[in-house]
Image (tube, rainbow, N blue to C red; front, side):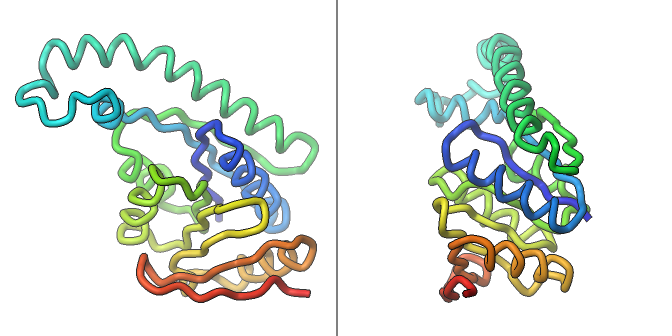
Length: 191
């Protein structure tokens, strides 16, 4: 059993990290911290999307070689900060910087994970949607300090459900349950 966490360096991502660590401590399990460099996504953000022949070209490969080292250093730095959050909490952290499609890399790295935790930003919603089709564990999208969306809750095992219950009773966390990316149901925080 392990928890897969996607590190991104935003305040909401830090909230997701803290939740992943708290749940891991409660479950007495490990957390896999992952930072992903998606060269294709970088080119889309820079406005090069759809330029015929660019991907795989010399220009693309040269740019990729220049951008990956500093992004790797950034990822390593974020993952060190993530590991620092777990210090003294008896949670083992394994950290990885991977290059490729975010959904594919997460599915590979988290193939044996019991839970995926990531922040609910507009870039992560398509990733979570793809993961819900390719993984057999629940996905926790952290929407704020007090609200999360749990996708595929039927994949929760008893131990994970118990850990959620303990965490929710100690916090003001509100959980919304969703099946895939269709309808969602709210559940009030336990009192």
